[in-house]
Image 1 (cartoon, rainbow, N blue to C red):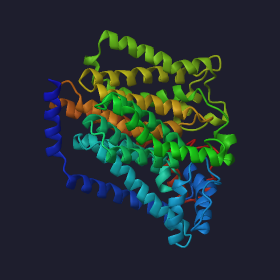
Image 2 (spheres, rainbow, N blue to C red):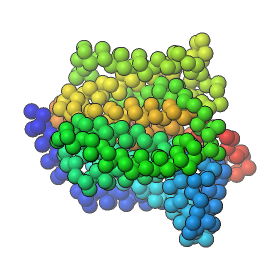
Image 3 (tube, rainbow, N blue to C red):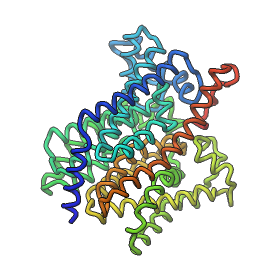
Image 4 (tube, rainbow, N blue to C red):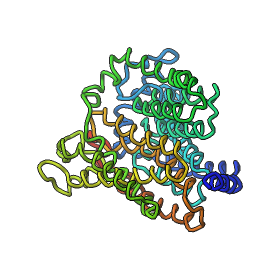
Length: 463
């Protein structure tokens, strides 16, 4: 039954979505992005933490590397991330005669197009409304907007990681573990890690895919080693040059130890994206699945009970989720909002994964599940529990999760086609509302009266 269901879905999707459709959608949405980036670049608009990060960290680093070409020093940078984004941007800066506006426009437009292209590629099997809503969820993210309208590393990491995750899933789905596919995935993961080291969670996803889907047990070590070698080499070079996984200049702020609140914060964020999907699969819950879901929720929220989970620490004053924690009060220096949302988020994520598994997508459930959990755990290695470090990997996983729920639905009926779009409307509206508040309104105020908008404080995307 599952084979028949999947074959019907594949034939329907293939006829509904062609290469020309992909390129038209990609070109139109990319053009919208180029207009927005051009407006912010050439006005120019100096607002939000995106501009602050560009002006203090990313443009000075890019300009310095451009001046040093053709032999730049790429390991002694005043950023917390890997050097690849700045190295690539430095060639644009050099070609534009060190013009910040033109570099910002070109790099931002390319990153926007890369993000859109990667999400459309992942979501190509969805109905058009759901596919475009999935793109809207991603590109309207405050952190994606700030990373494309201004120069930061998040959007490039997102695009590379999304393609890598999609290829990993396709590799496990088709079981075509040939050298070309393994090398492509290995290089993409390595490139993502060279932009932001936290993309290393993709390596675990790849290893799990190799273990559960490789046709030969004897071949698994070779497959894992070949795919992991590029990333291990990149991380080894960075560790050797930096004396750790964080550049020395940013170690005090970003690398002073793990933040256990990263786990409940990550699942609190997932609640707003996963819960709207859960309400349309409630008929598929079994009592046993619900028991494990409740256990999952309890485990995800426990760190917020053990450690203080309020808004009072400087490294937690970033993003709308911490605003909720701030205004919802505390009990014993613990945030009831974070505890509750983390619990519900853990429950929702487990139920979605269980649905995919129960409907014939066992390998797919493992791959997306490992991606979600591993990305949250890795993000907790940072000493900051800011929202941006959880939302970017969430946006990598979310489109594929939606695709898998649609692919492995129990009843491929027409009503579900509309349900998946309705469920995506909730996170899309949430993202748009946050984008208007954090990015849109400051831009409008700046246009009306630049003096009315103070320079951003040293708070990542506090909003």
